[in-house]
Length: 372
Image (tube, rainbow, N blue to C red; front, side, top):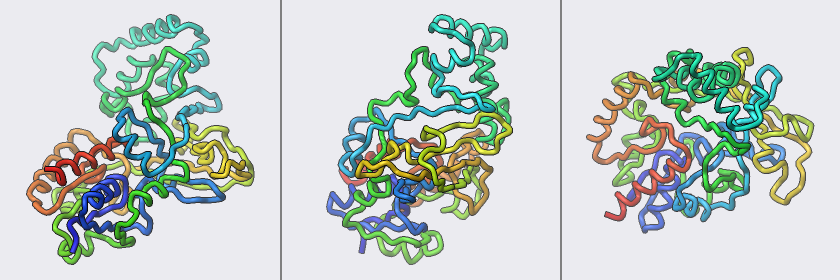
């Protein structure tokens, strides 16, 4: 009946489905949730597009990806400039001259560089062996202790000395006053929210919500020639080789009867004692206004708590350590034998993808599948 059954209506599934339909294929999209858009799902609360599964800020240097997404949504000019709160002291993120001035009183890039070098030398680090040593070699001991250590240990649930160095190699460090967190040519938030963007991608495609693929696999597989599976790869194989590990996130949402709670979309709480990692104030992704340009009288905040994942929780971040990488490689071998099923996306490939990379990956699969 269908050429493709797409399991999951997040970005990977939606992009593949849209492209397959555009090329004349019959597509059915299913999702076990009762909404489309996967983890980029946004829901309107008090006129504010709330990022239900955590903040998503679109940024990319890939022009073909930007050209693709802007067919389905107009993007605003939001620039990600988070703030770090360490026991009531506020610092600029990414680490830049504002941060260094607040931390050390330095004024010039030369002074900042010298301070970092001095602290790195004092710590005696030449070849960083873990995240702690990598961070100190990039920004010095003071910034590591105040702005990285507590936040990272809350996020990953492990001491920084037990985390691999590569997690933090992309940490933006700037000897300028540039507050833009991402080094991306294109950046913004879709006007009207991500759900609206994904709905536009899935326009004209049959979508069935509240359908659990793994519970109804035999009957659903009969409906299509091929399956694009974007769920967890270990769940597909019923965890028969063991569980892959993830970090999960729990959100506490609150509607406040005031126009402004923290004056910024994201504030990271970097001390170890504060139980949440950050607070998101969603209205600032769209400059505090609704689509008609009116100021919004209320605000919605989300406190984020990082936690160890267990079966039944929402998996967010793959734990790409040695054990999990080896286990994924074994699952990947099983996946390659499944001739009818293609595994894709963050969960299907056990890989932390930025949104643009997910879309690029789906577009590449389309090229391979439909243009050969």
